[in-house]
Image (cartoon, rainbow, N blue to C red; front, side, top):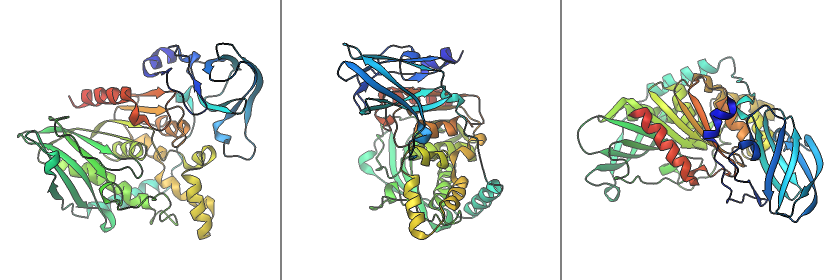
Length: 410
């Protein structure tokens, strides 16, 4: 059952060569690719751009990649065939993600039963109380939106605006809005941006029968003004951490769209990538008016494990903590208030998530720390085994996401 359900969501591109010059075989069976979905034992069959002959092959758990001594689960010799194929008997592996190393020069990730990865929520005891208090404070701030028409991205179908409104703590947030000109009520897409991503204007002819809102949280997007770091701001405690305000800006964006005269609040959906993927999960968790979400490569899932897999962003936070004399453990405890996996059980709407198996920025384990804790059974995922963090470059995901969200607001 597991294999048959997920074959439709697994896409393998044989022509893409990720770092390390390794290619999947192109076989449609995922057990001959890099993502294994059944109970095992597993055999890895793949093409590598390496000279024929004997070669070392090592498999390392991703959760040990930042450790001084890494957790090696397999160390063996393989033969690179004349056609550059290798075949490796992996045996039975626990659910999770692993780094494969051939001759210690070619490295790539494989995954095993990702929907069985365990990363349980660990919200602090006052998690709900803290966020209820914060959102009550937000509700006391008048929205007071200001609209500036952008003529070059407006036409007879839709009008584009830059929008600013007040948010929690006196900060300004907003974004870029495209609204149909004809009278009526329209479905709305709320789009969340990646960490430090550049804002863009929406083609007024692209979705003329929809409202689209590209959100800029405080100090990012249209408010960035040369800034490039937010993750280590205010890490002293939960009251001052940057993302307390940014999470409020996510809620404010939903409030803003729902209040638009032409918006149909029963047909609102959301999507985003990286930080935007995290915000997408958050929006659905804190506001039931969101009817479906399509996040990709989501950020901020399980900070503690994040720090065991890749350097950024947690070790950047640790660097700031060390410089400020803050114990790292204290910072990790604080980050539990902002861990998206702790909001995940509150997500009840349909979810379609995508991820890149080779992602070095938001590694797959952290994606599934969120996904596997969702409070909905109406969920599925799309894996592009050869993709890194740049899911936005995958045309297939654009098509899949659009179809999924269109069905939700039809």
